[in-house]
Length: 197
Image (cartoon, rainbow, N blue to C red):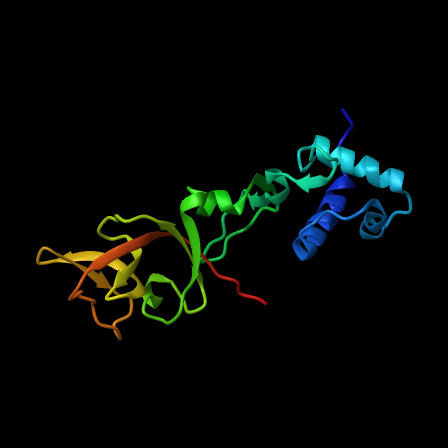
């Protein structure tokens, strides 16, 4: 097996950045530019090492494609304090794929952009992307996407006097007590927020 060269970490990063922009692994000629090297044979050797390390693979017709590991991101061994500052080590922990943290059942998961501030006290902001597992049942206390009188809403499922209600997480909004049918579309399993454009 070919050894994984420490320089390959840099090549992998460049390839990941290229893939983020173009959603493909380019030709050897283009990779010479991306990697900053002059030889296609070097490119082939780099791709071979990345393949043997599990970051990319070849289709039956010889096209390089990313593997699950290609999308893994480093998770620092240290946690970050939201209170008083503490010293942080610069060591790197495990790698994981963000999808695996947020999504249990891909075939039942959808992403929905949040509009409004009715769940602001639950940390859900306007413009966030809700990761929702589609299912028709939920537990009291789950944050759900519900259909009430033909409208979708994101609220916390609760019960009052034996009836299901939907609680906002903002005192400026009223509790929703459905007059008609309350249908659960799905349950919030994660949240995505991008702080910088």
